[in-house]
Length: 256
Ligand code: OAD
Image (cartoon, rainbow, N blue to C red; front, side, top):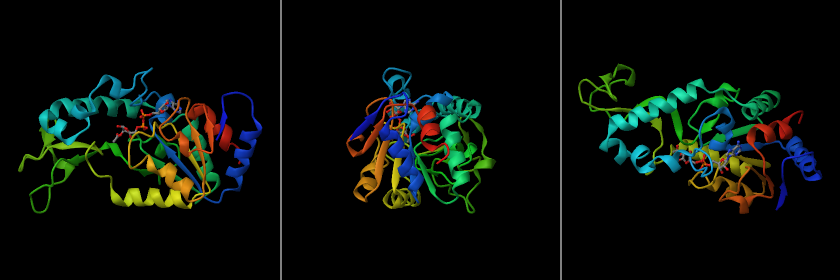
């Protein structure tokens, strides 16, 4: 594996830009570090404000935690939703949006992020493996026929169905829950079919998402990891850029 640290262009980076320029299929797989420079906290950065170093994922990101204290969980997500709405795409998101505009049909963007910054930066078809924090869902299937709409939920913390008492919840995938199979299959197909996979800002700690890097590599893709810190999937990389998303992506994608 080759490694590059922040600084002037190296031969390895020129080689990588050449590979991206020649790629007929580029897949980019992002995690919380992608949005860190937009001010959205990551989950596992021990040295910063990683959410899971301050809060309990069992309490705040599991069906059991929600059932135990729905108001606590709802209010925590309300704060995170406000943070997402106030955030703006950074130079990394914008570089991906610009690449997608210049090369229609060439980029498959897969994210673990539940914010909407890729979409706002010009990548509306982003595959969102872990859901959408700004969307409301019912906690349980509604027992009414026809099922009631989430937009008709009655007041409360969380809001609930006036008839069956069903609770609203944020539309994210919690620990112990299945990913949407169609999303996972689309992501796996993109990983298998790409020439180059850029893995940006993920610890690689959460599966099945983390498996995309190995899948792409075994299928013959050139795998690049962009992360200022080590990740759990570094062994899958042909090339590691120890840099941030907002610095590295414009460098890699501008003009290619
Ligand atoms: P993590 O918080 O686990 O990892 C964030 C990674 O981003 C770390 O490896 C950091 O080193 C790196 N990083 C930090 N700042 C960066 C920057 N400016 N540029 C590039 N990289 C940077 O986040 P994820 O890997 O996304 O699940 O976590 C995976 C899942 O765990 C999340 O989707 C979430 C969480 O529980 C759900 O919401 C279901």
